[in-house]
Length: 227
Image 1 (tube, helix red, strand yellow):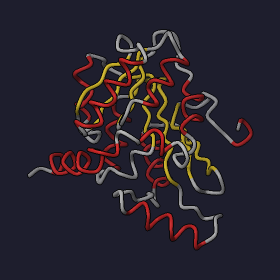
Image 2: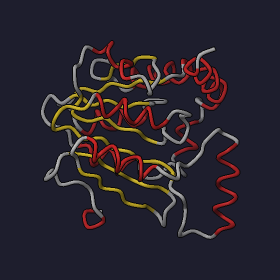
Image 3: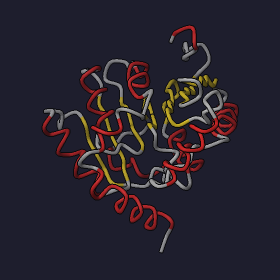
Image 4: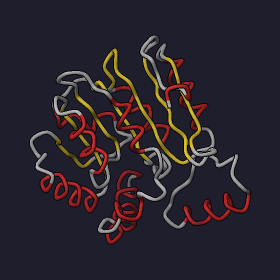
């Protein structure tokens, strides 16, 4: 069995039932997602890709916020995609949001959309669930347009929170196969340096979460002053 097939089976097992209550329950602890949507700011007729789109929650919010852009989502879970398609259709956005089943770590997963390069690529609480998350970051970066920007929001290391809370949170997350990536910042810094881009990385909520952008110099990346 390939790693991609194994991951797909795992994600389908995790979300087979959870997908029905995912958006209701996750809004209380997947913090920073709205900041990411607010910061996307794609230009006219821009192409925006989410790798690990889940239920389509972020794509729907972004499509409503930026009506001139086109949106695309890739997810490895058939169950999540089924829910996402239903949510997108219910929102009346099927004409502006396209979905495909694929592995986020595969640079060719978005080929089906017929878009050579994307103006925005983002990950929302996805990298902490993808076993080959470094490869997923590389795959997304490889699909960026020359002036494009890559954005990430995910669990941080909770370094400014009480140790008891941190221990309980990590133990609870492990039940859902979630692992906050301790070296996420280092990996993003390396990715930015390799592509002559700039990294902005900001802890949120006392380190509970982290928000990062990788983009061209002079693009006005996120900083605490703009928070």
